Image (cartoon, rainbow, N blue to C red):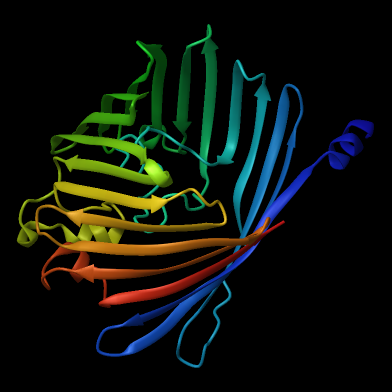
Length: 336
C-alpha cells in the first residue's frame, strides 16, 4: 500500500486541449474541424515506470455546426522495466522507427501526415526491448503480437556509430500475409545535416525498394531549409495505374513512385515562426503548398495558422484525393 501511495504522489500529469477549425472551398465553402483533449499520466522510477494516455475527439461540421461525440480512447497504456541500458516496454505505446523526417520506409506503424509531421501518433500494442552495448551501439527488438501468431509482426534494429555517422541495420518480418523488410539507415552532420533510409521489401506478390534521402541546413539570418526525396518501388508512374482501393482501405499512403518534400522557414524567433512547406508528386506533377505561421503568445499556448493549396490535373493524386481546391485553418492548443 505504501508503494502505491508513493507512486500516486509522484505521477507526472500533462496534456493539452485544442481546437482546429478548417475553412475549405471548391464550388462551395464549408467549415469543419474538431476539438480535442489529451491527458497523460506518467510515472518513471529508477528501474520501472508506467504511462497512460487518454484521447478525446469531438469533430464538428458546417451544417448547423453539429457536433459528433466520439468516445474517449486509451492511446497509451504501457509498463516498462529496466534501466536505460536494458529495458523492456509492454503495452499500447508510441513507436518510432527510422530516421527520415517525412517519408520513413521503416516506420510501418504510423501513416504519413504531410501537413503535420510532428502530430500525436496513435499508440500500438507492442513489446519493445532495448539493449545498450557499450557507448555507441545498441539493439532494439519489437513485436506486435496477434492471437494468430502467424499474423504477428516482429523487427530487429542493430545500431552503431561509424566515422561520426549513426548507422542502423533493420530486419522485420510477418509470416502471414508474408511481409519481410530489410535495410539500412544512416544519419549524420557534416556542414549540413543528412539522412538516408533504404529498405528492400518482400511481399506475397511483389518485391520492391523504398528509399528516403534528405538534407537540412540553417542559412544566415536563421533561415532553415530542408529537402527530402522519397522513392517507392511499389508505386505507379501513371495516374491511371494508381491503386485507389488500397488508399481507401488504408493499405497505402502514397500512390506514385517519386516524391519531394521541401521546407523553408525562419527559426530565429521561438515565438513567431513563418514557414512554407511543399509536397510534390514528381510523377504526375501534382502538389500541396502549405504556407504556415506559428505563434506562441505564452509559455503553454501555441497558435498555428496556415493554408493548404492543392494543385494539379483532375486525375492526379493530390488533386483527386482532396474534394477542395484549398483549406484555411487555425489551430489553437493550450498545454498543461
